[in-house]
Image (cartoon, rainbow, N blue to C red; front, side, top):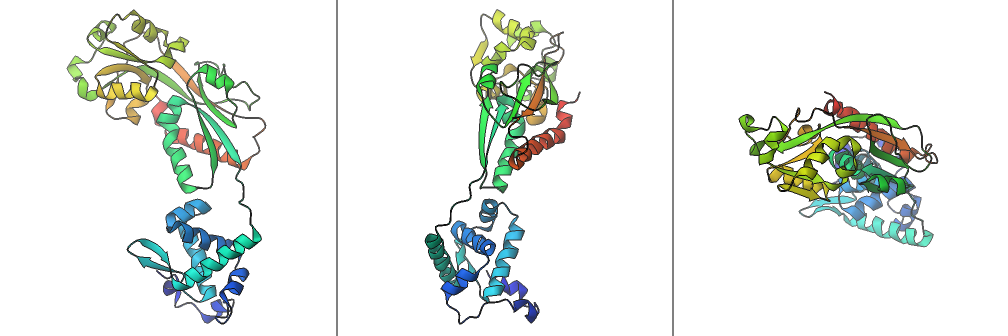
Length: 326
């Protein structure tokens, strides 16, 4: 597919900077603007506009504009459409060979991307941030991001990261990271209640008191045994002589609630995350709450890539504000 075909009506004046066709391909390649050369080379290597745009961290429309500009300058079509997707035309192959040879001669270094270390509480990463982080990486395939899952207070104390998102008690961010950070910001307050899958519990038969739980299997994520504010639930689980499962995996515990008619303690937002689950409020007289906190490593505060991650997290929680209210 030629970009020039869509620009055939452009004024001749816009082609004044075009290369003389009698010039050799090596000379033409050497004179191309480095940005346009990079756009062409990455697209040729990827064979896909979308993937090339992700690799370059620009929009696909912007990439197409850059390639169209290059085709106008060279006065030729560089790409052709085929059943197998995007392929180089004869002229495109010539240009690609020369750019590759020049790159080897110049031994151009790969531009190193700053690495951002993000440490997130496992449940928050799985339920809230995971999808938006994937979308970020889909837009920018050249990013360097270390994602660390925090599954205990011990792992929080041991970790070193640029951005930390963790869970703490309802009144204080402590215990928090062990290194110097910016002032912690509270992102949300979470209320925890037992949950059950809707398909395993008719409305008339849903438990309304602790005694009603005797006919149901309970499943507990082992990490929750350490949480003081979960004492009412933990005491109930500890009293069980049968009909209880302890899981070291959060995802497996969640799957048991979804598919095994188990009742498990989950954040109140879970019915937004999974419409097949329903909370069972009112079983415990004492509220079970935690708060989500975020802080930035004091040494990383001014880094642009770090601020990008911070803004993504803030925007994600703001967009899901209704999950945490009520």
